[in-house]
Length: 376
Image 1 (cartoon, rainbow, N blue to C red):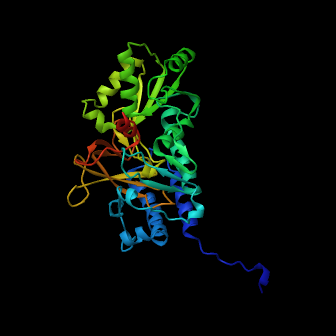
Image 2 (cartoon, helix red, strand yellow):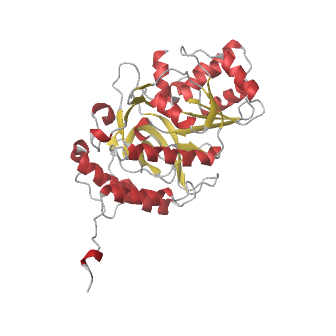
Image 3 (cartoon, rainbow, N blue to C red):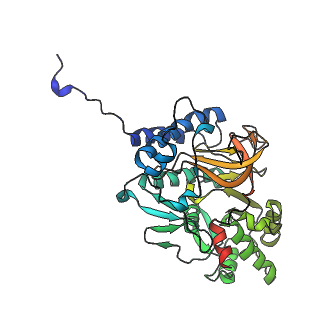
């Protein structure tokens, strides 16, 4: 006979526990070295659990997607939230008492910013995943860092804007952080030249939002006829492409201009957004963006939202295993992109690889670097 004291009681697993268990398993998968089929199998399990969590805890999401069934699904079956809804609704799936901070997107002047509510779980995993992705390109050593931005305050209490969040995320990989711009967006030549002298023979990290790097730094160097030399630097940049494309500055022109005026030989673009902080799609040596193991993309027809095949251009749906505190795990963006292949990029990284072509026509500028563009 078994003593009553030794009887074990089965405690049912909560959605949160179930989610974290599945996320841990996905996190253990190599970032770029797992086949698309295997990644989808693991990712879909996490996303289905997130869907259940958001249906139960976010009334607006429940109205949008409660009828969706999670049985025998593929990645392309997962419902999406239009990115614009984050500007119109306060979407969150945790009690207000668990919200640590509210991230606000950096829309152009006069627009309502998107509001992204972050709790401890989401914030922690955003940082862990971002570190894991960027270490594939930067290594684990923290490098001297030049930030192509101003040191102005981008945070007010628990509210943080996306531009500051982007800087903060990349700053984890740097040391001796030096801001290249003054608060009026002019170049701080004294700071830049001192940084170049100090680290002229060292590997360094440079980060900035695309439009700001080109408009406030590269163009200023050329206009002032100055010399900036960072021959061992690696520049990471993101966002603001639409305004540059209107000036006939494409990815090749951008890299050539950076090399010519700063000597920076390595330039890496990445695709990400405030609505899915921590999820970034990095550019490889062949100019393609890659989906990491914790995220993916689906390309959809602009008219009927059907899934597109390799070589076709359509709206980008971004999926991420990270958003627990708000229903942002599957978002239909307003960006147009092209899927170029799966598991067979020449760089050796597996999974989907793609390019972003443009913003959907008649959609206003938005994004971290566009904030500065609107103010100029």
